[in-house]
Image (tube, rainbow, N blue to C red; front, side, top):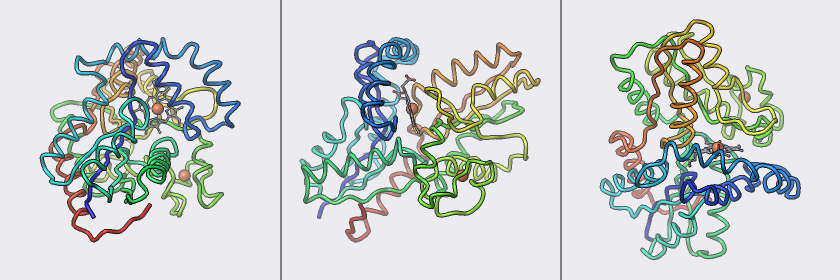
Length: 345
Ligand SMILES: C=CC1=C(C)c2cc3[nH]c(cc4nc(cc5[nH]c(cc1n2)c(C)c5CCC(=O)O)C(CCC(=O)O)=C4C)c(C)c3C=C
Ligand SMILES: [Fe+2]
Ligand SMILES: [Fe+2]
């Protein structure tokens, strides 16, 4: 048996051309684990409404953050892959759940290298139906259809792993070194509250009443809300942050369903209006900077804050290809590679 790793991130359009953005959004939003409506309703909403207007607006947003080398999310994921590659002898392929860098191509690349035991690493610290689950389901479908001799081991969400908490905390500390701030926001990508209920394996624990996430439950293994709040709590503990000087919010909502609250944009506004002048913001749902951090937070978020009287807005970069993060991932990979073969998916 020969071992290899498939890193999987979300993906980006091929370019900032509205046509490419439309193609990407079509694939992304037609995923039943992202917009979880029955097919006909999903198609009516996505193809009949969202894709008529959103691609142009999103293309403009992408244009503001696009790099000469391409999409920041993809370029940063490639840099991460390259650096991990230089630390470990295990073959590493990179794929995206949506867009041109497909999971199928990633598995084919590993297959060509003789790999038949794959460690699947969704590049998300927390579990969500719209991230980890959709990656695992698609990878498994491709494996069963094209590579039945391959076996998978899935890296579990690492939101509370001490190594992850340490590098995240150190990155925040480093980024805020010498800067003054009154409050540190931990802003996570939101999900509809319905997604939390659907992933609740106890069928009743997750009430989103402000208390359930702090009450131990087997539901937390798949609870995005709990896992985000745990990251905030553990980093707060690591950095010895004072109670009341940091909090959790959720960004990037789409549509009219209730999403996880409090919303980041409204919180930034409320804090500015309430007299906060210096705000710091970290985005630990993403391991690579992307549209949601570079545009929605660093541009739109800062604008909102300044409009309501805020003065200093410190955005903490994602882990991207930081050396301590690369070393942690490489060590996790090497530890897995040294174990006897055992398929878990
Ligand atoms: C934790 C990660 C993410 C979750 C959970 C998630 C859920 C989710 N997202 C949408 C809709 C959109 N997201 C968009 C961009 C985007 N989303 C994530 C991550 C998560 N999404 C990332 C990393 C990005 C940026 C990609 C990039 O190329 O940089 C977009 C596209 C941009 C836009 O038009 O705003 C949409 C749309 C839904 C509905 C959803 C539901 C659970
Ligand atoms: Fe998203
Ligand atoms: Fe909860």
